[in-house]
View 1 (cartoon, helix red, strand yellow):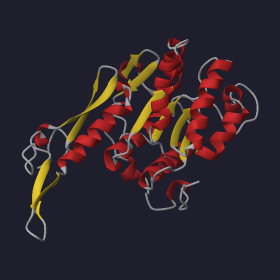
View 2 (cartoon, helix red, strand yellow; view 1 turned 45 degrees about the vertical axis):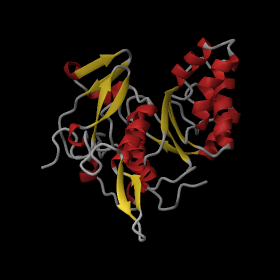
View 3 (cartoon, helix red, strand yellow; view 1 turned 90 degrees about the vertical axis):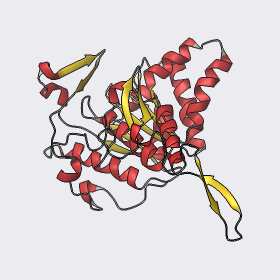
Length: 298
């Protein structure tokens, strides 16, 4: 019988404080292979005994990477399976397919994704689902950052160059970076310089970056155009760094009954009724949802 706590995944994920936190499940708290030592002993062809890492260290690595991602607690339960898909919303259905395909075919320094569309369509949900899969199934180090929070932290370090670099450097060096709500802010010259430094350094090192934004990267002018909020230089980099995926449709928040909405600041989380998973409702074969079979590499 599968573990009732983790479903035999070896770890549990819960909202603790400001972040989603992964912990080793009780069912694997003491490994039956190494008795908690982290290493197992074998003999080579000459009979010499040697130690090698136990498989349980893989779970320790996954937990470390997941907690290092700093996913907000609000999104602790966001997965591809929990994403609600209305088959009448073709663009959202296609976006689920593109993001899932991205994870299934992920490789080092792969071209990223820019998920764009109106509010409430699940862009952040999809990005967090991608983070979970890459960390838990591929053991990839990732960092999630909300753009406005990054700007706030940078402003707090104003005048302290070393502290400012301490904030930017980990975001430049992490193999996969996920930036939520790109373009949100006042759009001052200082904000643009921070964004330009971060994106330019990741662009030059060909590191994978994921973005969500409420602004349209395909428009050339207007307040709803991404170029208005990030500038032409940054938009040009985004064209090369990411595949642009539209996530437009009805705002699911507007369809919710007020009695089942749980508000936290300006965010809304919900506990939907159980239903068939996307895997049961969508054809995952190559080419489904308009997904190209071509690799995503630059």
